[in-house]
Length: 395
View 1: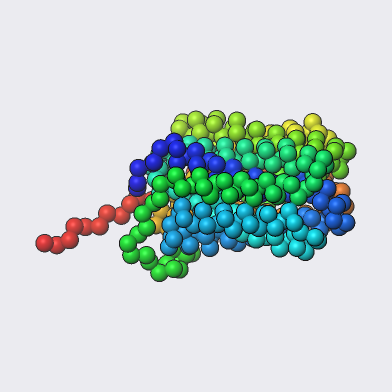
View 2: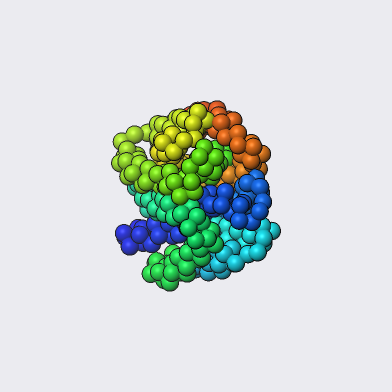
């Protein structure tokens, strides 16, 4: 375990999560405007968003393997250069096919950002201080979500949806320069075979369970959040107001992340997971009853509470569950999260296109309950692995 390199490193990692989230949440508030501008049904744009999330999820373990060989910081900067190029291309497309390809490439490249931050924290922060540090990373996610949600819909309505993608491309390029200040971590002198960490993951029942939980969590939380702006517009709000309603989610994550960081010092982690799952179930229940702006804002607050409490706890668990394959486990965790979101986009696109958001959110509310029970019970029964000490060599 290395010594945590200070607040400047944490600020840089927060900026990384901010830029990645800014791009990731650029599309949801613009789905309706983009479908109108490109002359395609809303379901088509939901599928395009699903391509982004699928590529984002699939590439997580790939970037984890690359960072084991190339280094965390170097991999992060390389991926951001490629992501900036793809986001700039997204602003210049002529049809939905080109947009789908450009967004998928952008998602594949931005995929390196948040796992790299989690792995960096896992490699440098002692286990007893890790959850507050990961909760602090979530403030970057909160700021990116709030800014994307508040500005994307307004820009799409007042100027063009293309401008938001150009903005995320510019932010990624600035971050490439800033990350020169992030202290690199030493690479192992003798890298093990490429698939060895994946083999350890496959043999670890608790790690596989954490990955399965992440898959379901991604479908519920990210699925609920992705469709919230479109659901609010369908209830009669304009794109700017729908985006501002979703921005409330980012503010909620920011506020509750700090609270969760403090509670994690005194409360068992399973309680944070259970409370977060309950908040998500309530959020989806509210949205099933009404998608009017006030109700949608309340749902966004509850989703932010659930993300800060449940998701940050599961992320911390992913950094601890298999220390000998931390980079692979964390990358697969993030991959499963966004793969779940992509599956949800496919399953929910039909009802969303038909305007049946009441059915969509009722189904998500019901799915939250077994997720919360399984995740909290499993975390309560799990214990941090005790390091195996090798006996001294014989003289």
